[in-house]
Length: 68
Image 1 (spheres, one colour):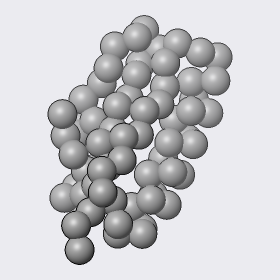
Image 2 (image 1 turned 180 degrees about the horizontal axis):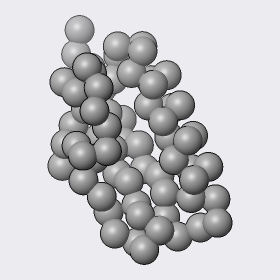
Image 3 (image 1 turned 180 degrees about the vertical axis):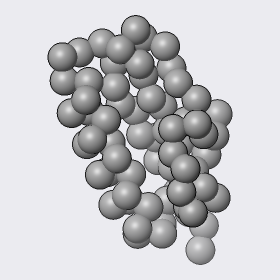
Image 4 (image 1 turned 120 degrees about the vertical axis):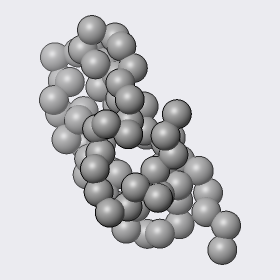
Protein backbone atom coordinates (compact mmCIF):
# COMPACT_ATOMS: atom_id res chain seq x y z
CA UNK A 1 0.00 0.00 0.00
CA UNK A 2 1.33 3.44 -0.94
CA UNK A 3 1.41 5.89 1.94
CA UNK A 4 0.06 9.40 1.51
CA UNK A 5 2.11 12.41 2.57
CA UNK A 6 1.00 14.75 5.35
CA UNK A 7 2.62 18.03 6.45
CA UNK A 8 2.51 18.88 10.14
CA UNK A 9 3.18 22.59 10.73
CA UNK A 10 3.25 23.98 14.25
CA UNK A 11 4.74 26.58 16.57
CA UNK A 12 5.41 30.18 15.65
CA UNK A 13 5.48 33.49 17.45
CA UNK A 14 2.47 33.18 19.71
CA UNK A 15 1.56 33.05 23.38
CA UNK A 16 0.11 29.61 22.53
CA UNK A 17 3.46 28.24 21.28
CA UNK A 18 3.70 25.50 23.93
CA UNK A 19 0.09 24.44 23.34
CA UNK A 20 0.85 24.17 19.63
CA UNK A 21 3.82 21.89 20.35
CA UNK A 22 1.77 19.59 22.57
CA UNK A 23 -1.07 19.45 20.06
CA UNK A 24 1.37 18.66 17.26
CA UNK A 25 2.86 15.79 19.26
CA UNK A 26 -0.61 14.33 19.86
CA UNK A 27 -1.50 14.68 16.18
CA UNK A 28 1.83 13.16 15.11
CA UNK A 29 1.36 10.14 17.37
CA UNK A 30 -2.25 9.60 16.26
CA UNK A 31 -1.62 9.85 12.52
CA UNK A 32 1.52 7.73 12.75
CA UNK A 33 -0.43 5.00 14.54
CA UNK A 34 -2.67 4.56 11.50
CA UNK A 35 0.29 3.47 9.39
CA UNK A 36 -1.24 5.17 6.35
CA UNK A 37 0.87 8.33 6.14
CA UNK A 38 4.41 9.66 5.81
CA UNK A 39 4.75 12.82 7.88
CA UNK A 40 6.80 15.90 7.04
CA UNK A 41 7.24 18.07 10.13
CA UNK A 42 7.72 21.85 9.99
CA UNK A 43 8.42 23.24 13.45
CA UNK A 44 8.55 27.02 13.75
CA UNK A 45 10.42 28.48 16.73
CA UNK A 46 9.09 31.50 18.59
CA UNK A 47 11.67 33.66 16.82
CA UNK A 48 10.30 32.56 13.43
CA UNK A 49 13.05 30.15 12.42
CA UNK A 50 12.02 26.81 10.96
CA UNK A 51 13.69 24.04 12.98
CA UNK A 52 15.13 20.80 11.65
CA UNK A 53 12.39 18.18 12.16
CA UNK A 54 14.87 15.33 12.31
CA UNK A 55 16.36 16.81 15.46
CA UNK A 56 12.97 17.26 17.14
CA UNK A 57 11.54 13.76 16.98
CA UNK A 58 13.47 10.69 17.93
CA UNK A 59 11.35 7.58 17.74
CA UNK A 60 11.29 4.12 16.27
CA UNK A 61 9.02 5.55 13.59
CA UNK A 62 11.74 7.65 11.96
CA UNK A 63 11.16 5.82 8.67
CA UNK A 64 7.69 7.36 8.52
CA UNK A 65 9.02 10.90 8.89
CA UNK A 66 10.08 12.87 5.85
CA UNK A 67 13.07 15.10 6.68
CA UNK A 68 13.49 18.27 4.66
